[in-house]
Length: 197
Image 1 (cartoon, rainbow, N blue to C red):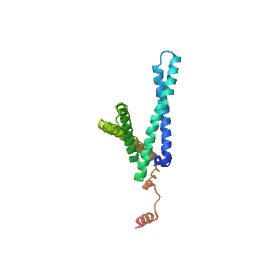
Image 2 (image 1 turned 90 degrees about the vertical axis):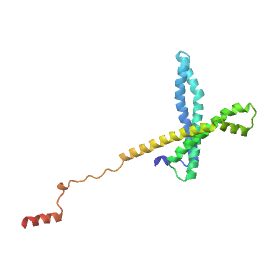
Image 3 (image 1 turned 120 degrees about the vertical axis):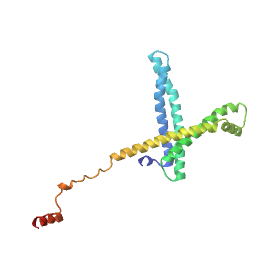
Image 4 (image 1 turned 180 degrees about the vertical axis):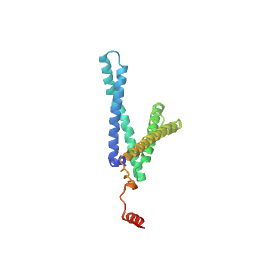
């Protein structure tokens, strides 16, 4: 498959991280431009300034979030390629699920750490509380969503590849009508024997 003929694994992580940052920054920039324009005070000057300010502040943050997701996804994907010894859609699906779970654990722990650090709880207890207060459930939900999303993307890619591959297959040769073919030598001799006997 052409999709899997990409950069070798260590460079793939950097490539995917940069591509994800670009995609997030551009997409987030467009979204934030519209949002900043709508939320600014009345007047074209105020709205344009609000739009530019929203893009300036939020687009790099959204790009960074996408870059973290893309880098973690590629890192796990490369690890699975190394572990399994082959590249197939199962690596991407598993990478999506594990990325969703890891990022959910990170965000769950981050939320809980702000609450627990005020109580001067040591790091190990903080980690245990994170998992006992709903962390695994959140991780499981994010893992399922990541896996399902990547399964849909990979499945759609496989279907699209199969559909477009049919267009480029060599057509079957035309079968000729046997009544229009010239007679073979054996058939010609039998017809002449039948006429004279």
